Length: 233
View 1 (cartoon, one colour):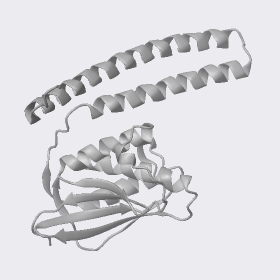
View 2 (cartoon, rainbow, N blue to C red; view 1 turned 45 degrees about the vertical axis):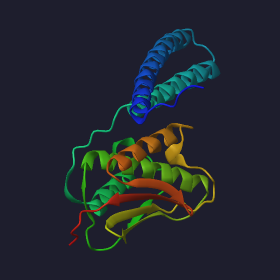
View 3 (cartoon, rainbow, N blue to C red; view 1 turned 90 degrees about the horizontal axis):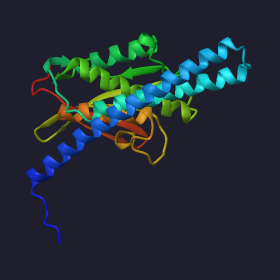
View 4 (cartoon, rainbow, N blue to C red; view 1 turned 30 degrees about the horizontal axis):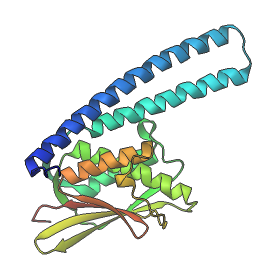
């Protein structure tokens, strides 16, 4: 029987697997870039030859698919690296979320929620945490985009509500953020790599957990918990 690995040996094995995965993803992306080059060349040849519109449309879809696959591989490569935070604080977590929602509703930087409007419901008092503002905002944006897709796929009406609250259990004091997607599908997007949406949300989960928080899908909502500083105003 093969002996069990010690915790340190197991960690080293996981690190080696992570490095190997990043290299594999990098090599696959290089191959996709080569395919895109050939496909782009073929499209130019077709355009010069006045080929039927459906042929040009097909090659366009092929190039778009290659681009999506390359983007997913870039996300997987990012997932394979360790998360390094530059914490600052105290920072009002509600204000970070408000800015994320404001940008998404305004379609800033081309980020789309497929027509779903998000509204935030929280208390007047700030919820203060020591966080990496940039990385946290990016993670909350990824989760919000994913929540909007779930909300729309469920054919829900009205805005998608994002609620803020605080919860204290013993010595732990957390901010709780819920995206009310309100469906009963048994699917955890924070632990899935089934597509671009899930990859982004899984990466966001790593950022949340690096902050000492947690993510889960519970009772029709996507939930994030983030630790607060001990003294709240």
